[in-house]
Length: 71
Image (tube, rainbow, N blue to C red; front, side, top):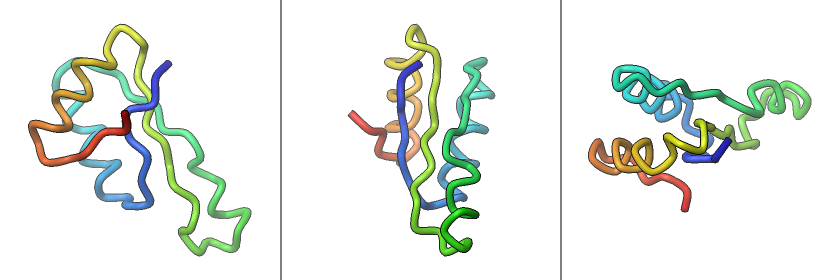
């Protein structure tokens, strides 16, 4: 799996997931519960992962829709 997005913006994660799923790419979100361990402050970024074979296309989709993917 490759990381394609790392952000604290929950709406960006939701938007990216919807975009990718619309193109048939399954995205998996990591670190969902890490903020609960830090008192729910929202200081820990979440990571969006895709299968290795979809990473290039997923990053292109994010860029085309105004999101900056992780390198």
